[in-house]
Amino acid sequence: MEGATGADSHPPKPLDTRSDTSASKKKDKTPEGGYDATPIPRAPPGYTVKFTFHHANNLPLADINTLSADPFILADLQTGLPTRHKEDPPLTLRTRTVRQNTNPVWNQEWIVANVPAHGFRLKCRIYDEDPADHDDRLGNVHVVATSVSEEWPGIHNETYSIKKRMVSKRAYALRAVAVCFRKAEHMHGTLTVSAEVLGKTQDENGGRAYTIGPQFWIRHYSPLLGRLLGQKEPSSDEDNVSLRTGKARTERYNFQSNQMQLRGPIPEHMYHRFVEFKPFVKSMFTAKGVRGFILSKALHHQHARVYNFDQTTEYQEFSKPCLEFTQKFLELVHFDHGGRIFTYVLTLDALFRFTETGKEFGIDMLSKHTMHSDVAAYVAFSGEFFIRRSHHNSSAPSDEGRNNQSSEADGDQSKEKTPIKDPSHYELIIDNDSGTYRPNAKLLPQLKAFFQANFPGLHIRTLDSQGDAEKMKKMKDEQRERKKREGNQVVYTQVSRSSSVSSSDEEDLDRLASGGELSENHLRHVMQREAATKANAAKDNFKGMGSMGHRSE
Image 1 (tube, rainbow, N blue to C red):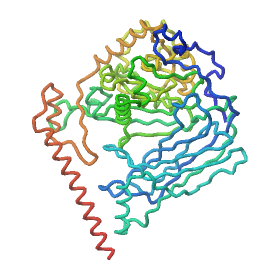
Image 2: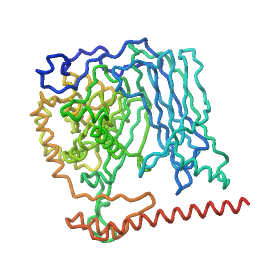
Image 3: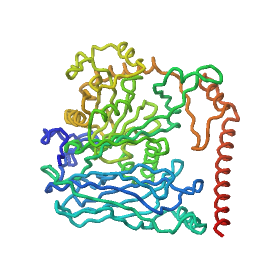
Image 4: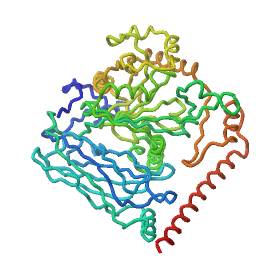
């Protein structure tokens, strides 16, 4: 199976921009970090392995309200291959969540290249998704293979007992109660997994394992961040009029964060460490010391809030990079509408994370790119990007032609109700504007080739945040002006799964949208309604359990 993605397999080695650790470091005031020239350790090419997470049975009851669970698997693949640095993260995959089911069926695949001949250890941690609190661990399964080859028989629908170490005591206590009331049969859960070799990975160096596929996209929603940032997304005119008042309706939608699994491998030289531009930065990334521990914990928490999984999270898979995958990317960024600018991070395993952000977001999040990377010491690349309409569909647009494009023309195009879905009509303008990791501008051609391989049909253009600073500033200023012209006041609200927006909430939101203040009893009203909803749900569930007990007798 092919391991390359279209990028040059032997790229020119860029200059090392890290500060030296020798005596000359004292004379060099450049902070340590940025591009890291450490090569990938050499190893024979490995094997491409497809893992399949089929299903689980008899999981504990993690939710007292539904007497069920919302399980997902967090898989961690350990290959024993030496890493460039000890901070390099392991290969991980989070499966989609199955709602309200203690016998979930995923049938989700994970294809990994360069699994070494000496085998692997696959750790599967099963969690219950809880958007309002921390996810409860429901159990662990370890899948071990001591050798892998093209003659390896593989693992076919093997069922493993779930270990109960380090799991949620509350979840198993609820299952024990359910067993007593004969709602559940027994306490022992299982997980069924498969693994098979697809062939030898066609790489010259097998020194790192990486995800080939499938390609997927995930869209997360956060009403709270949406309210704080005041962003908008396209909506039809008829949806903007309230049926109750006949006036313009307050728009309610969620701040969106996005993840896309691209096809690996990441070009070898795209390897950047955090920059120690302040004394506290290193302790923040390593979680050393009181201050570093607190900052690291805060950023991990903010990452979890921004990339929060709940019942509104959207997910879809593609077998490989294709035109539809590119169209989905354009849909996630709303094509060229709204003058949006996005902050992104590309991880070492080709996970592309991005959100629409502004300067106010950076202040709140301490560091935008640190939050997106989940405080990762090393990433492949980071910066900002935006989408513009391309006027040269038959070939890649020229720099001069793009710079001379008027912002008014862009504004007229963005007002189209039905955007053109052909990727050749759009241009991704992406840069290395990240003070957290400071990606090397000499690697921008490799970044361009990588994105061209993963987003077929889309024009890609790169900008150097320093060498093209004036041009980049002008283009981003045009984007911001478009956003000001097209933007409207937006108000967001967040309630529980079972709650709905009442008429008094609409009045409060309309008042806030028109520049007024919320009524004094608004917070009390919402809290009382939320508390009553949860109390009633708990009563109903306990009544149901009691009636089951009487029937069983």
